[in-house]
Amino acid sequence: MQSIVVRGGRKLSGEVIIDGAKNSALPLIAATLLAEKGCSRLDNVPDLRDINTIVRLLEGMGAVVSRQGGSLEITTSAVENCQAPYELVKTMRASILVLGPLMARFGEARVSLPGGCAIGARPVNLHIKGLEMMGARISVEHGYIIGQAERLQGADISFDVTTVTGTENLMMAAVLADGVTILRNAAREPEIVDLAAFLRKMGAQIEGDGTHTITITGVEKLLAADYQVMPDRIEAGTFMVAAGISDGDVVIKNAPLAAMAAVVTKLQEIGLLIEPLSPEEDDDELYKENKLLAGVAVRVRRGLDGLKALDVRTMPYPGFPTDMQSQAMVLLTLAEGTSVISETIFENRFMHVFELQRMGADIEVEGRTAIVRGVVALSGAPVMASDLRASAGLVLAGLAAEGETVMSRVYHLDRGYAGFEKKLKALGADVKRVRD
Ligand code: EPU
Image (cartoon, rainbow, N blue to C red; front, side):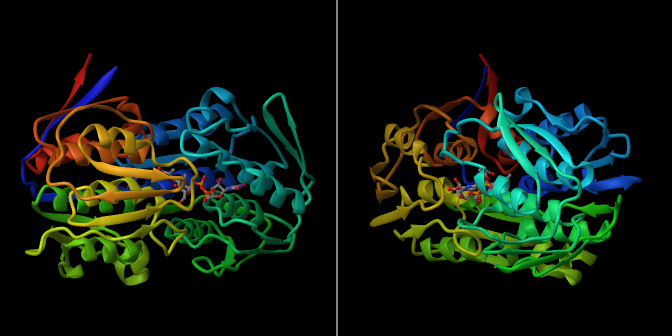
């Protein structure tokens, strides 16, 4: 077992480079299953446990995958086994993303039903219902979703609840379907725009991504394509909080600022100065093509007035992301006044609260609302990570706490942050990973 040990009190300074987005790379890798011919190359793929999991999933199906640094080359022409086994799916719910592409290209799939999850029930009923509306016959047997179809048919599908991976799965199913599919009340996350851009490079016809209504006209076949994964807006937001909570001065490079408006506005209102440096400095062709998906450099530090309490409500994009809730909460534990944080996406995403209380935070939870009364200081303590974003929040708390914080269950962090403690260390944090 590994732990992260943080000694608080260091002001972070210097530069950090944001990696590719986990929640973009996962659907992009799944989408390579749609290519009948050729080798797709994905650049800027983060080095994460979840990425290894989806790569193993594809390899198990017969895909050939090679990795060089941040680039993956994936050939799926020889895929013949349309199964996603429980052993892999249980470690990562996003494995469900192979369901849409498998049904679209092969008309069959056997994908383990993801089980329970620490942050909420997280059913996949809308993924299944959408595929059924496209003509698939779906049953659940022995814990597996078994899907069959001749060729999927275009359909007019309206989501009851906005779902990110549900939208992605049905988009990937629809690109090879017969006729037009309309996805209504679709999720608008930037990662969906990133996936649509890749699918278009493969030959798909998609309009309206980034809005609530996505229209997909099915084509006969898709071919492999090259693409660069957008930068991770949650990693960038996490480092913004790291700069602010440590009272540091950090330049965050490759931050997808245009995709982070809600986070940037909230952090500014709490009291951080967030100044975009000229995009010309590290821009690329992508910035000119689509600002939303491009990274820029941004300087982050605390303003002269200190940190002020503020209410935060998590919402689907373009609202404040649930994946930034724990990090924002940690910052607000040290702000002057009382903040109210409402979690509207997942029913059980406050587990970090009980660990933060052990570090001296004054937080009360009532259902899906947390009331955070600012304290003058946090004190280091042994804490336990409960999920990916909670673990990032606890490390951030450790940066500002007096004394030593030891966070166990580091595997949660490794699912979604590449070299988190190395990047913090390079900014001057006193942080290390230890093996028990
Ligand atoms: N929902 C249903 N039925 C469905 C699908 C979803 O009721 O068929 C509900 C969920 O239970 C939840 C809400 O809809 O209450 C929204 O869930 P969504 O489906 O949007 O979540 P997701 O697609 O499973 C993605 C990210 C999560 C992120 C959420 C919300 C990926 C791989 N995962 O999950 O990321 O929190 O969207 O933005 O994109 C993380 O990176 O730490 C993470 C958990």
